[in-house]
Each structure stands twice: as C-alpha cells, then as structure tokens.
Length: 88
Image (tube, rainbow, N blue to C red; front, side, top):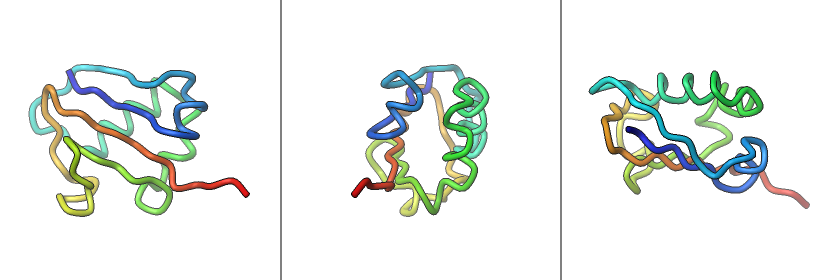
C-alpha cells in the first residue's frame, strides 16, 4: 500500500493526517494524486496544479529531483504533500 501524508493546510482540509491505498506497480504520481482527489474532494482544487502550490516528496525525495508528476510510485512508497500556501 502507498501511504500519502498531508502536512499543514492540507491536513486540515483532508480532516486526516494520511490515507493509504493499493496501487499497481509503476503507477504515476499523477494517478496517485487523482486517486487522492477522488477520495478527498476537499483537496481537489489544491491538487489540480500541484507543481505551483505544493511540495511533494516520495520516500523523502522531492519530485523535482525525480521525474515530476510522471514519477513511478510503488507499493510501500511514502508520499508526503506539503502546501506552500502561507497565512499573514
């Protein structure tokens, strides 16, 4: 199972710290985010354009250092999503 953890504003919107679900081997991060937005509709808007508003890590590595949204996600991977939105 893939674990997707939410930090900051996302945790409040999701009303939970994380979710877990099974994925097929080699599923793209883009598909994982689509699944998250399907299961947690309150996150849908923030997940529409993740590169501009979120920092996403897979197994403690930022996706910008990997293959972005095309990065393959496998069973037992840990995805962490952090909002870069800040209050004043």
